[in-house]
Image (tube, rainbow, N blue to C red):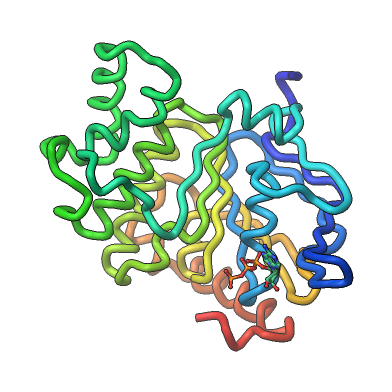
Length: 262
Ligand SMILES: Nc1ncnc2c1ncn2[C@@H]1O[C@H](COP(=O)(O)OP(=O)(O)OP(=O)(O)O)[C@@H](O)[C@H]1O
């Protein structure tokens, strides 16, 4: 792997589901540099999750290639270069917070003492120290997502893939977790690819926003977000924040199903 390889490199990717079925993605080219925070936004069904899953080697493209840090997506998965977080926290209800976060490390055969040390660090990072012995059902939705984020970070992945991780949370909780996610991102220096339906969330978090159009899913435009990091709640009040949000909203309106976007 070359030191200068892109974190994600997508070349001519198309995805067709079933024979003569849905063309979910057509001719996607995208390069993401190490340490970037890139959001994918677009109308429902435009292929955001499909693209994220191709990057994560959960599904194969029908055409084209996905390279991760100079490796094939498949090799990157074998090397555990990914952390993944989905809309549902998918925690194991019968395991405590500590044991949920430790699960990938257990599967990799880490010794107990090393595992415990790592879990301690991770829970500190997501501000859940003190909740080690709780079960998922004793936590709020936002706390559960923080456990899922800690678990995804357990191997110190270089790439974190997030599919609407805060989509099921109320707006206040989402805003707070957005801030926390930026702090974690800055601390880990990982590359993040983030799927969202929320324009405000995309602008607040991202260094670039990939605006997609529907049927078949294509990249309509990539919007640079030139708001400086670290960002704070004040960032959401800046005129530049509104300008970029308006630009993204207008791009989405140009695309057919833009009314589905909130
Ligand atoms: N496993 C599958 N089999 C058949 N069609 C699929 C499959 N997965 C996705 N699709 C279709 O591919 C298209 C893109 O789906 P995808 O879930 O990637 O879109 P999305 O932009 O993430 O949507 P949403 O914003 O609603 O989550 C849709 O038309 C969907 O019905």
